[in-house]
Image (cartoon, rainbow, N blue to C red; front, side, top):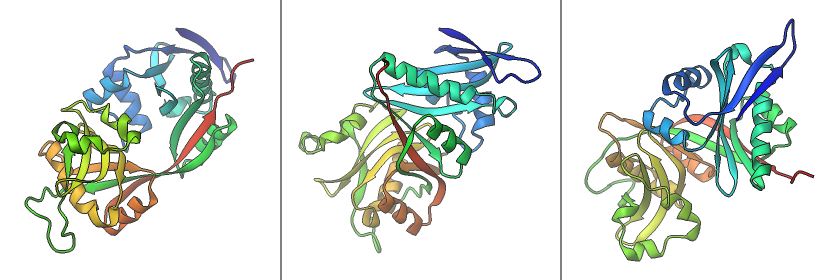
Length: 283
């Protein structure tokens, strides 16, 4: 599906082509992504291939990629990224990509669409509010160093809490996992994606995360008692990463985990606003 869009008349009309393009090339995608998200580009081929399983709308001007939107669709839809290179901003492209995502939701009877945007990106927040997105909470992302400790945790953190792959869990532990964690468990696809369960001792579950090992990053990251278990849990994740990877991104909405990360000296990468829009059926 390709739409010719005449957007933002100035001295002349700029004509863009917006297409649903699952076969977009890696090099041009990464080039745009690095320009729009220099702090967190999707440089891994494995992550790029995962993105292509979702919906990617591309924006081209004279055949050249100048923007894109990445939207995943399940029971709800989620806008992961809307990217427009700087010289083509303020021409209505981002708004049109939002409209296309909302129209897609209506077509497939999806009732909710969500996103997260940095708190200091006031212009983007205003744009989403223009399209009736509402703020529903905060989201934090911290950079945590991996120390790869071995043996029992001693001193300040005496309890041994570790991360176990869902594939290594006993049937007893599997049976007590909350049903609301099922969506994380279903995404277990080693060696690039893991569902990790945080376990204290032999039988006490303390949390869960989805680890994308190539990023590397954990989202969602759920820890029931972060003030006690955070350092040991983060270090235990290191066994699922390449030896060259020394940091990991933790992304979560839980303020108590954010406080524990600050206490541990982890760096706050982003503080974001979660936003949501209820989709009304077309009349």
